[in-house]
Amino acid sequence: MTDRDRHVRVRIAPSPTGPPHVGNAYIGLFDFVFARHAGGEFALRIEDTDRERSTAESEQAIMEGFKWLGLDWDEGPDCGGPHAPYRQSERSDLYAEHARMLLEKGAAYRCFCAPERLARMRKAQREEGESFGYDGHCRDLGEEEIAAKLAEKAPFTVRLKVPEGGQTGFTDLVRGDVSVPNAEIDDQILLKSDGFPTYHLANVVDDHLMEISHVIRAEEWISSTPKHVLLYGAFGWEAPTFVHMPLLRNKDKTKISKRKNPTSLLWYREQGFLPAALRNFLALMGWSMGEDREIFSTEEMIHGFTWDRIKTSGPVFDMQKLEWMNGEYIRATPPDELLQRILEEPYTTRVDEPAEKLLEIVKLIQERINRLADFDEQTNFFFEREDYDAEELIPRKQDAAFTRDVLDAIGRKLGSVEEWATEPLELAMRELADELDCKRGALYMPLRVAVTCRRVSTPLFETMEILGRDECSERLGIAARKVGALVED
Ligand code: GLU
Image (cartoon, rainbow, N blue to C red; front, side):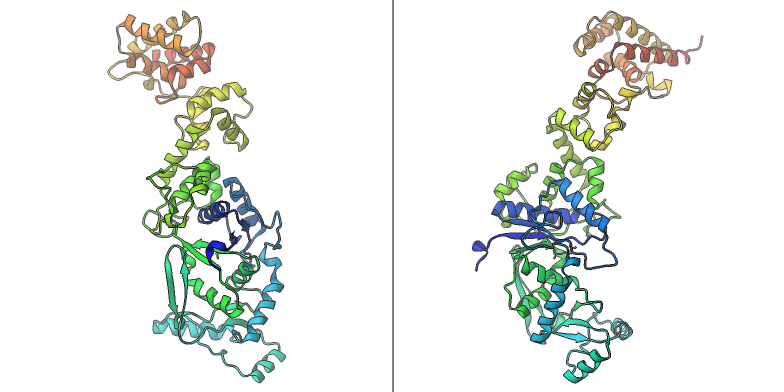
């Protein structure tokens, strides 16, 4: 069968040993996009074979994170599917049964080596500067010896019996042929002494039973794939198509890590990155839309998806670029939708403020923020009078007396404005600048600091309209008194 006529089924197979990782989300995105492009299915399988490190909280967080990002899986532990269960800890019997099959075929063997012996072996290998690998001590135990050990209930693991000579290879969909001498492949443990499978056995058995057509995973798994290929061969199964995606990298080109980049998907959510923006960014890390396009929707990617546009060089996770992209998405979102997002998460403590006021503020702030979590910090002055130094009010090359007089004049002028709205306010201030024969900047700076309590703020007259006449005059009064105190009589 060729790839072309194989019904597409893909899976993301995270291990629930920590917060949902952005690298997993990146692979999940490609699974999702490819499945949708090909009219196939996308499954979520929880690989919780590491009993000590796996937790239910992590599983929950992974599902929540993926849902938030919009990676809708068709089959999984929460929604079931034709190959349930989708949690490996609930499939132990299957792995044990398959390990037995391999033993019967002679493709695997029982290893009775005690941990102490393995530790000694490893130490010797390290001292000799050899790479670690099992030395084959139990590879050729006789039937009687095995029977005797089993009778005395000696604990054992099951290992893959890697053929001695030859090569094992596969064709990676984006990298081409990959081949490794069998001599370099370790007799991998498949079943641990507690009866639980290792990643390799469980992964292969499940990918086969779940009829996965394409295994899409990060490049760091490449060295595992020859072992998997041997397993498929040993079972007599057809192997899926493998795709090893370029790993996300820190700026220094090392694998993306917590120390250098936030890696938890939940962090991106908390910061107020929009799912669509993060999807676009992750897509761009591994794929090009063509024509140097950087902003594109997941829908567009699904429509135009081809494997030959995968970038194989290590993409650098550039936070500044993500911020920029998120800003673009924020600006392209209708303000009412943006407000809804801000209130739903919520990204603000101002949930009880009147919706109309919030909407007006969103319209202004949407031009200036790159993360929704910045909302409160950037808009605080709309709701509270913030403290500031009187010096802040004084424009460059001017003094306190000038500033006090200007603030007084502004106050009087504003009193004559009939309609408290952006345009008349702006007009009045322009007139005043002419009347006083001063530069607009010298007028606007004290006014801005007086009403917003900041030197940098949202557009001045729109902001004043939202604040309202009474609040603005109060704040002007406070400012005039503040700066007045600096003036020596
Ligand atoms: N459980 C592995 C992980 O945590 C799955 C790798 C694979 O896709 O085969 O990423």
